[in-house]
Image (cartoon, rainbow, N blue to C red; front, top):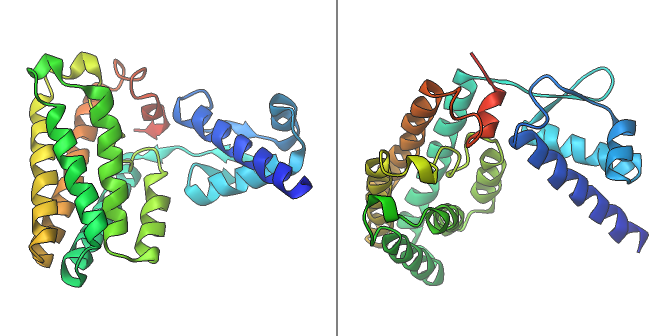
Length: 243
């Protein structure tokens, strides 16, 4: 029981601290100390220490002489994280095509694409943003599994924990949906083509499509950076990017 309780406290600390960093409450450069955080979370120092160590492994914190500091990211760091996701997803797509994807997973990702299509049934202003965001995350989660490689799945999970490498990091919000509908249409077309290439065992094509798909996130990033001041609310983690 004590081990289960300790593990539960660590996960609670990890989840809450990660959320506070990503929503901008704990800004880049903020020093985090065990005792104040343990008091705030009403748990012992050990799970707080373990949670901060995990966040340092994820890249959100960096170790300091005493405690940890919330990281800031240069624009090059963010672009590199997006490129790395593209390389890993491209490799996952190629291996899935070349090795032959698990039929159950291939059927599942095909259903996800069909459900994503339904998000676009209305006009640009009627796009179901909440469902699109959820299904988009599901698509990329299954894509990571299709290669049947635990190594690739693990590394993709690691890089996607960075606030800017997540497939949904720079999706338009509901207010901005009409003006950026074209970006979503392009991304959805790429979803369909990636799955088709994997199903047809076209490894090189699947890899190229997946890598290009990740680069749409870079274009979305550039759009967000151009409107950084006005978008700090909808994309709170943008505050972690330093010029």
